[in-house]
Image (cartoon, rainbow, N blue to C red; front, side, top):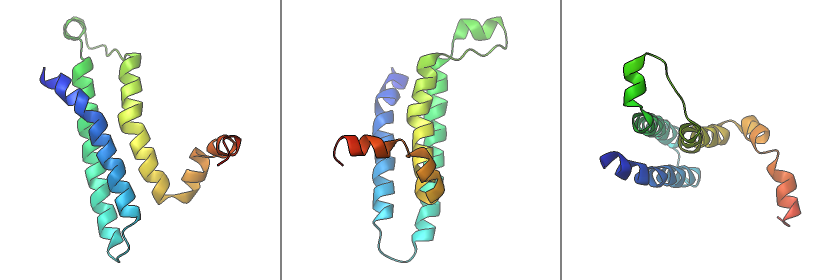
Length: 116
């Protein structure tokens, strides 16, 4: 029951991270470096906690008793990509402009197709 509640709150946690990134990008005053460092620490802590919750939710008690073999399901991988990989890549792309160009090069034709 508690893990189910946490699973419902994960999208809101990621959304809060996105809001923090937008607020940090529009912060006009000088100590941006300190705020970026704090944001990076908060982002890493959030991603680690979300991945830990996802791994605990996907744990198979019977399989873990049989042997040390780890099974990874596709829904687990989808959730890890959605809630861990994408936010970290988005943050890194704001810090490293060349990474942003590499990651989002496929968006330019899509934006032109829709008139953007």
